[in-house]
Image (cartoon, rainbow, N blue to C red; front, side, top):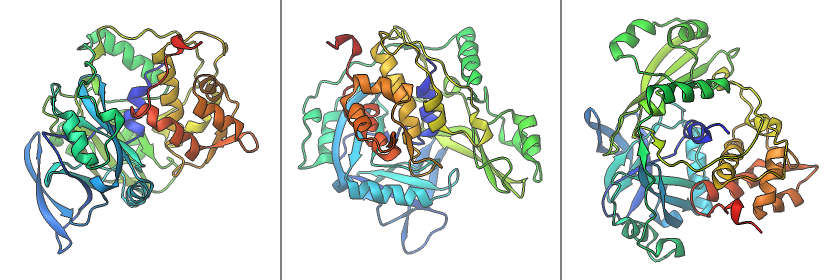
Length: 402
């Protein structure tokens, strides 16, 4: 099974937000392009120092919109999963759906301090994650309780967080092997970022799509088909090449390029608080035998629903591990996230991936039973899968199944 977690980091847009210290309030607002009476000037710390931004005073959502929060641990960091009310999720989805991907930003404000201003790459929904910058963050339960206020969650009552898995840097050989596996299915990253001075020389106005690709290689993903007049091209630095970044500061992580009338009109650096992806010292065993279709994200017309529907699992009775089941959930969740953006609104209920998930998760089996003309609405699939991906529900261990 290929590494779907890397792909989710690109396609689900927001895999992590930064938080620091003990918190009692949460606010997410738009970042404006210029100041006005409706904005306030705030400062965010980045790798290059302080950055001043104009933040809209009116929030999109606050801690009052949070209906649940819970602790979870991932490779190298602790996280807090956040689920919004239906109304809060609709507001966040509506606003982010209207923003310009690759340019517009959101402000994440905790205790009246601007902690992060991520660039929007896609539309958000009801659930997201706050990634904590301190691996020994003992106050995480207080942070959760502060956000929840008078709405305690059973998942947040324990102050005992699960231990973080042990990780180590990838060797040069391991990285090259991982890179080759990703590129087999059309997922491309930069090994290093050109300097701003180099980019000014390379990315001259007027270049065609083909000329950009000849200089930088295949992009990580594209918004818009190459045949369209206006498209956006995104290059991301390989997760294994990001800085260690233990303090979760913002740093340059990629390049956003705009083409209008088939000609390059501008480019900008993209920023993130991501930290270097490292390999697990004792990775969970994987057994799943699966046949993946070939596809290219860089082409701009990748159809994730078709990718899921065309993925074949020859033996539906085969034994799998917890890691295998999570990989399949990640794959199906990638397609389901596009229920408001893609050309397809449903997926085959009897395709191998959905059928396999239905054998292990009763929520998916229920959706199969409710299928209309043999298809499941992506919106319903997304609602069923996201709690598992974000830690709101524990993925059942297939080895423990009767």
